Length: 201
Image 1 (cartoon, rainbow, N blue to C red):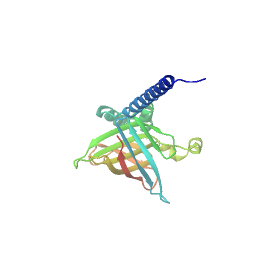
Image 2: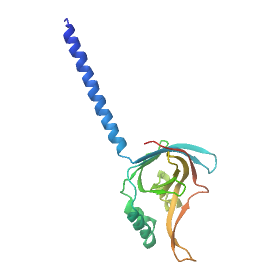
Image 3: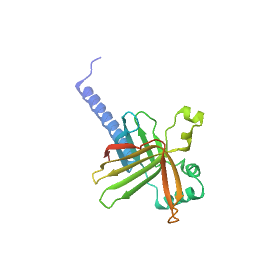
């Protein structure tokens, strides 16, 4: 079967149109995907306990916790405990945190604060990664249900921070002032260092 030059031209034109349409759909989908997140940060988690080990992370924030909700959560810690709070926020989805090859964890709390030196403090809380042995054995680590990452970044989104892989959260009354203060307890000697932070959007 002989194909005329006109038919060949029509086929090439049709193929070009199909490619352009698919590229447009892909670009639109990617744009929607990126627009789901207000802020995206990457960097390296450096373990300081025992032999030094590092892994990359991705912190993608879809939304931030309001001041009103933050005060509510602190009140829940005063009146109840960290597991009362966890039951309240467990189904929230403010973004995700992933590290290395681990499954991403949904952000339960995300706060953004402007610092006096022009830098920005980002704090994100999520339900920490647990091993099957921990869950089955009911070890003491079960008292440390949260993971917390804190980033301090400049106007260009570059900086460093701290990562607590297993944290216990409580509100303690100061004996001198009588005021409640947020207390974080880390399961381990030192928190991880967060290095090479960069904002990606």
